[in-house]
Image (cartoon, rainbow over all chains, first blue to last red):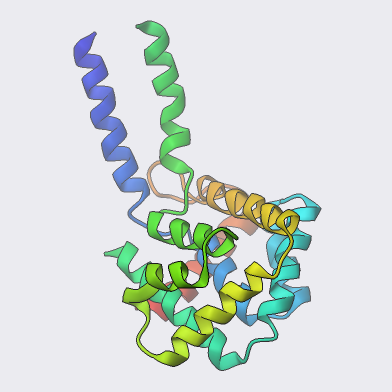
Length: 90
Length: 120
């Protein structure tokens, strides 16, 4: 019994190591879309998450603010996100 | 003991296949949304990724956008991020193959190629 618990814990560790080895592509897409695509297109891209309407509305509300930022500034934020993703992908 | 085994086995797929695959990114997003985190704290968190004043200003402005939102809006944004992180298990099966509808898998392939070509 002790052996089976040990094996389970080892499996858990290996499994989670594998799961964290790659960044979720849908999340990467959503983060970049948030800064660079128009509101109607972004709303459409959020549909895949099947989130509650109030959560989508909240996300669009914040996007309304970030859309006021210059494209250059949004590009700089995207660069920071890319650096974070690179660090995770190592 | 048997109950413990059952609970651990039940937790295994949930624990391993939910999440963004990048704890650092999750932490940054969480701090971006959190109104208790000041601009100064936020910049300290991202310091190693900031190269110049222009980026610092952009980060400031981003945080300001979140600080200007109501608590209700921010909690709803947080709900959305939890859903986004959890959606990872829709896109990946245990052998790292893609699962789900063709829309989901095609979209995941496209975004993966687009994002990682941008990174690499």
